[in-house]
Length: 294
Image (cartoon, rainbow, N blue to C red):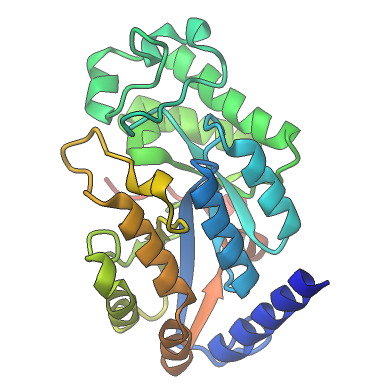
């Protein structure tokens, strides 16, 4: 009962603070998309905390990861969260790797000698991934998510790998149409960047400052990566040269920023309305989607 009371309190707090849904008086539309649900227990715990806060957001789930079943349980407890499938063709963490849902032997062009996804998009492309194998794997991820009980509204793409070429993007679009799903960034969203590379200690300041850069009349998209603090997250090392050190602190900092009273208050002052992919698909329909410009 206490958890439900906290959830209801959180929903009311955000609805009042941000002029949500029932009030037309808003100046900016903001979509918060949090990626990598299912990656680890600490990530799932962060998603649960954010869901309990009542902030409307979209949760992108990684089906190949070991903690995917727990992510399904978390999201089942919070049906107000809009669910998406984070289509995955890369596995970037040293010591924590994942394999294709379809099975490595079914999609050999997508995996290394140990059957794991390649850590980077460049390595994936260097091994000439077969388009039929990409389609088989991405379809398996969507089907598995649905069979597990998730009700996805959209798809997006981990590290951009699934849309890395026009041919790959066409596969994503084909599967989205087949499963009647939206595609992230196909609804005129405009990214508001800055949070990912901000140092952990200033992420609250950074997120509040990002609200000052919102554009009126468009859907401002803030993509986040969150997790509870944990030794597990602190031990992760990104195998990509562009990856951030101390990723555990970065993800904990993003969660702190999203949960901070300063962010909620700044959103109220700016007249922010928070939307999810479920909201915009209900409002516009899937026919409104347009492939973003290169």
